[in-house]
Image (cartoon, rainbow, N blue to C red; front, side, top):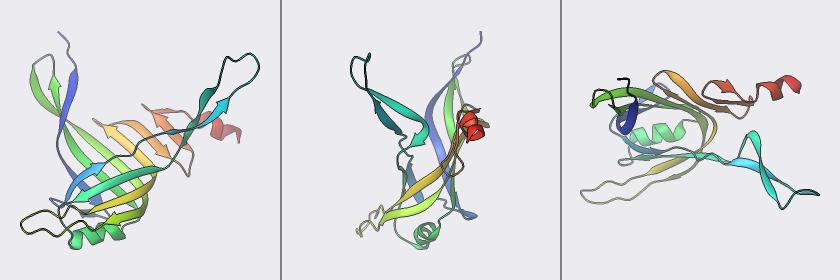
Length: 172
């Protein structure tokens, strides 16, 4: 019986920037929300307004990376304005064997620091400083397969390997 794999949780991950590995320092990352830019369609023969998404065009994309505490690693990350890569091991349930397996997930981002919080100073606690980056590029690969890529400056928008703006680029 052929089964399929259900992603159950992210077992672990690391953050990399400018050739630096942030082991045990970066604690959590919030990936961006993708919201299409839209235009309202209205007119004769249409029973109301329709919000039409502009293919491949999105509003601001932000990612937020949290750290355990402020330290040299935090300021290294803060100074980085280029590529940040998150590599993780996604735990998956194999439904055929009812066992756990692992699948790699990689998220590559490009952007600049938009804001940062130094967090708190707390005896015996975590300061939880955060860095927010404005992203112009996002690429997600799961199990070695590219599933999403957005490059705002080069007008590239791919889902499951399909370049949805190729025709647009060829016509302008």
